[in-house]
Image 1: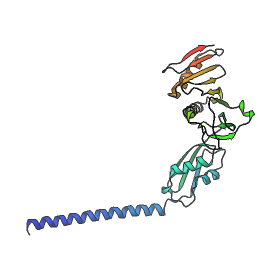
Image 2: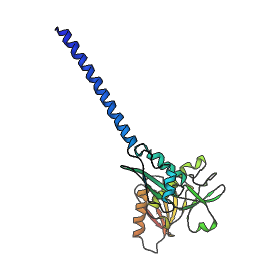
Image 3: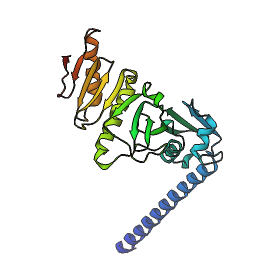
Image 4: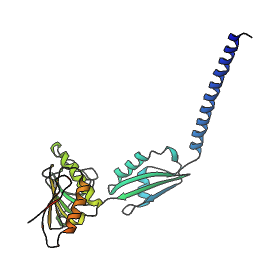
Length: 252
């Protein structure tokens, strides 16, 4: 056999090997997909962290049903469904537990602040989500927001504002999130967001706190807690956190 014929035969064998490998890969993938479609069927929905809502209410809001394929559930879309339908849910995490369980971990949200809109006052959560219309009785039991007004409020939706107030709305959300995260909400009387470059809030009925720009809020609040802890109980004044990495106390 000539050299040319041998080379041609080798090439033919190589091509056949490639086709066999490709077919094997396709068959394996098909078997895996078939296996996942037959097995891993949802038969249990486990809800963690629910208080206001029942487990069945959360499971129903998720849209997941027994018999659904566990591996094909879109966790992000499922979480969004729950968040949208159940307005007192603040955060949702959806995970899978093989072979047949979906775990829905929720953090419920509550009213933390009272804000004015063009159709009256509303109570909002830390994410500036409108939870319920407010009565005058809520004025003393909730943090008051000043310097920004909502537009066309709708229950369950995020606070809608005019274009010129969008930066203020984001700043307000960041402040509320940080305050709630540090369990400081009971010590804050009001937040004045009139100046988006230097928000202010009252603290412990003793201090006016100047935050400055919307940056490093977590760090600024840590400085505030440190400064307040060092002052005498009878001292009152302004705590200025607007300067870079520095807190300045000025007594009244």
